[in-house]
Image (cartoon, rainbow, N blue to C red):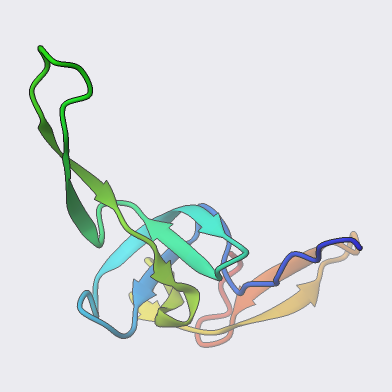
Length: 109
């Protein structure tokens, strides 16, 4: 049986605005998309710390900060030019290329 990748409304490199949760209102860029869990990782948002134990006898432990994933339903595409979050629609260009266009601003993503 072939595994089907879940469709998401966002892609890697998109500018987004967080619409719910602890980081509501923050704006960032998607660095990674986890399709199986429908989650995204956003640059410098939802930072969490992890205390790493020493691996060998002579080493010391360390504290590592990393970006934790956020569910894709909590983010929305964002237009930096007009400073507004919007849904999108698909449209075909003259060359029959499928493009994404923000509904509120008619800006091509």
